[in-house]
Amino acid sequence: MVWTIELCIARQKAGSERHYQTYQIEIDPDEYVLDAVEKAWAFYDRSLTFRHACHHSTCGACGMLVNGVEKLTCITPIRSVVQDKGRLLIEPLRNFPILSDLVVDTSSMFNNLNKVSFNQVASLPAACLPYESEQPEHAHPEYERLVDCIECGMCISACPISLTSSDYIGPAVLAAAQHESIQSLSPRILEVVDNKNGVWRCHSAYECSAVCPSGVEPGWRIMKMRQAVIAHRIKSFFSSD
Ligand code: SF4
Ligand code: FES
Image 1 (cartoon, rainbow, N blue to C red):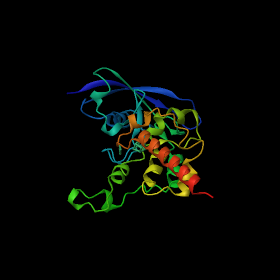
Image 2: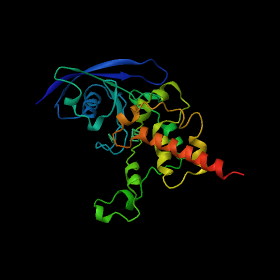
Image 3: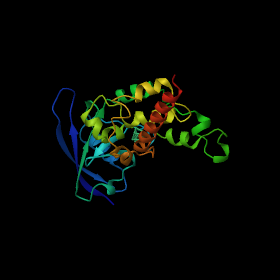
């Protein structure tokens, strides 16, 4: 089966205004949005810039706005977002500087992840063993779940606070901080999260959790992080002279 869709893509090079270009794409509805973008690049315009690597929801590179909603385009079927002869709108993620077309600069997120010492590469024994029986005894369910963050930045794109405040550290980083604090809350992480641009800035919209493709639940983790900070303050108050 082949559908014909109108693919409308946001185009913007550094320093220029955004405009939209439309491409007629023939595509099997069981293919994915990223396939449609690749067809536009391959058959119409080699200057179209976008990011991808793994094509199976692991690298986090292909996050885009699809009809205004954050999606990993490599796992979003065409039939789930458009109909035959319909129009599909593709734009870059929000709340990051645009480098070119659909490519945004996520370096602020990675810099902030480094501040909370988030181990972006999971150690093999803890996260990659295929069978439960091979999991090491110390493997903690919280840990295994959190390493699923693929650093796609879609939670930051969806966050209404990140939209209005560029200093807000953002849901991906606060979720990572909560992960790093499961055993104990270090002074280094406290310094990053316990301030007006950290854990207290969140307004509990939970848009981050709604778009996260890896089940990290950043919104829930921010609330857990708040509890840990409050518990730390109470403990410090009663243990001070
Ligand atoms: S928490 Fe989820 S949405 Fe945010 S960067 Fe990680 S995988 Fe992406
Ligand atoms: S291309 Fe790697 S997550 Fe989509």
